[in-house]
Image 1: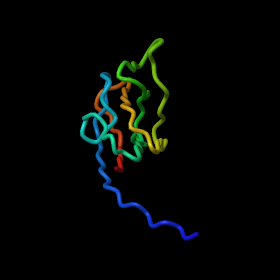
Image 2: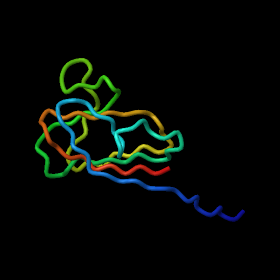
Image 3: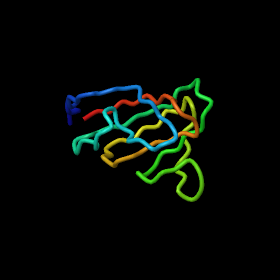
Image 4: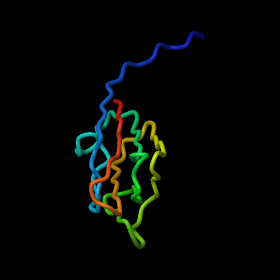
Length: 101
């Protein structure tokens, strides 16, 4: 059988500022769209901070510390509309995000 043509998507990208308070891991800091197909993010490769991502309760220390995200690491979720948050152990850090829906 023939390969179906690709489905057109809308892509959004942003460089967000991450600090010591958890923020939503989306381009606009809003709840992810129910039609989101992809979330891809990368912590600024030049950052010396430590980062963690997870639920809205993610912290930078202790039992609620999330999954580490390392500077320059490309992290991608396909077919995932979950609401992720990110936090750093230093203020004014940068994270690059692309969402497609």
